[in-house]
Length: 112
Image (cartoon, rainbow, N blue to C red; front, top):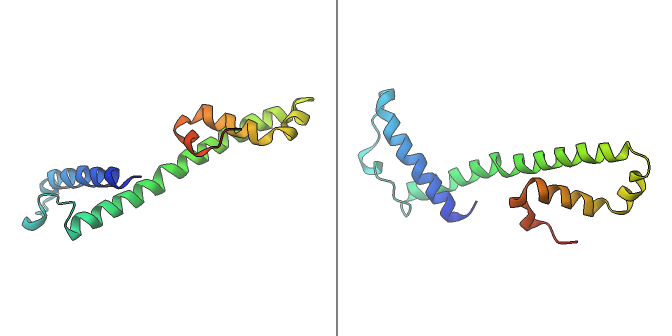
């Protein structure tokens, strides 16, 4: 997650938190009612949101991509003739599957 995306996510989190707080009988502090990305509180919130988002988005995409690749490769291994092809071209097949299933991850995969 980029720094700008982290700040924007923190801003949205903060605004939602402020909006919901009264419904839970909670009064937020007057000095932090308005999100300030340059304050220590704003910087901490942006860093926290960025770390949490990174932990719960990217690994899940990679995990899903690898699961999909595993399923496709398992199917290929079950068919005679494809096993030899797979052995020679494993990286190309894996990268192609990931690129097609998750184009946003393709920027990190070198072209073969």
